[in-house]
Image (cartoon, rainbow, N blue to C red; front, side, top):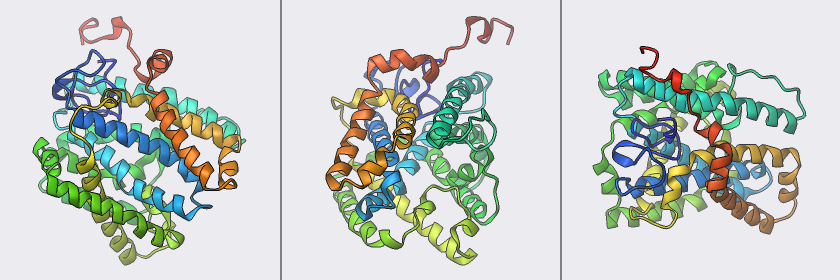
Length: 366
């Protein structure tokens, strides 16, 4: 996911975002030859799935097909985002300039958009507005806090033997305990294995996924996933996928919880690998949009919550499959719209905040 480098895939990796620097991009905006088109393609596809998923969620109680598709998407799209965040966090050493960049690129947008979401969600839910930044983050803002914490722990995971195994154990333990939801702590701990797995990956791992045999296997996996999900959808609890509910909240015992969570981790790994294998590694016409995905990531939720408050999803749910398809296409169009230059110019001050010149390192002896 510099003041312009707030992407998930920047030099030290930040957000599902726009401009990147270092081995995968440049800090000057727009795609440059040094950028790896595979990662820009992956970011754009995943952010489109995020927008689609948030538009599907209000419908999963009314449509078995939508619920099935939703479960497949949610089994891999956030794990894939988090894995890529970890991959591009490998160079993070908590140096002062890196921490300052992290604060500027994550905490400042969090403060701005958390207030915006609190206001919109309060309006949509017809509740009073309470400007509280320090309890449970609103809607998608949890990811900003989680990314901030995960990034700061990067040096720790370099020193831990078998870090992925340790992260899995931490995740499972968090699901068995009554972990606070303040500042998305439950999600931070339960999604942790994906970030740590990304820290342990190399570029060669992604190249291996692009072998012809692997891609044929990946296509078969994704094609199979949809009918399997459709069969399971009526009795499935989608709350397993958002990683914020513990075993007690899900209504299962310890053994059942551990078995299901380990199964979901395995299925998630399979689907993440399959999805990444099918993402093109060459430059496409839409590749450049992968450099600006921070905009649709932060902005689309405001549209979704507003539409929910206006009753749009209730109307779609009562209007049949054509309305659902139309909504899905509209979600794709929304993701595209929010990457356009006019939108970036209008809200760039919030998505890519710039600190005053007098507060930059060196000018005040820091």
